[in-house]
Amino acid sequence: MPVICRSLALRRCLASLCWVPSLPPGSTVVRRCFFPGFVEGAAGLCAIFVAIVINRMEFPVVLLMLALFATGMLVISQFARMRNRLEEIVNERTRLLREQATELEQQATHDQLTGLFNRRFAERFLEEGITDFIEQQRNFSIALVDLDHFKLVNDTFNHEKCIRDTTAVGFYAPLTSACTWASVQDAIG
Image (tube, rainbow, N blue to C red; front, side):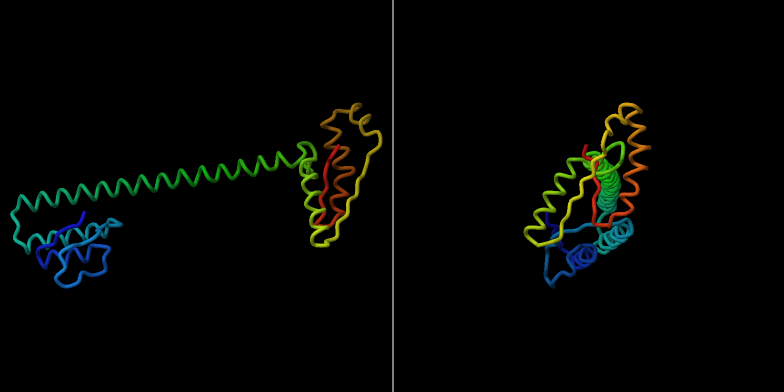
């Protein structure tokens, strides 16, 4: 709601407090006032007080205006604190959601025991690799390694221990270190 300025002193004070950079001569309307911080609010309070004194307003009116201004500043500072707290909450929840999304992506694309990419990832990777090969004529190769009688080894020993100790250390680790940065190793079977 616009503020009507009848006195030149009050108009100048409000012009210094408002977002509007300056008021043209003879202007009687200020469009939008706000006080972004405490220092600006204190300066605004002093400017309004000076404008009121210059206009020789009665003491009860001055007190009422000061009380209204102080209440407004308290409300603004409370809203600023609430907004800052909400921003902190949103930032924290966003961070947690990103961590959870990363963890879910890891679970969806990696084998739980070996840490290698799983079948789902391999299928998607092969699709993309074949598409790149066809469309962009990029080099593409596939090497499949089959460990004979691995089920017998797996059934004889503990499945988890067998995968972690025997397979990962004995087979996947040297394969991973021998491959280039662009290669991907999957545990498919």
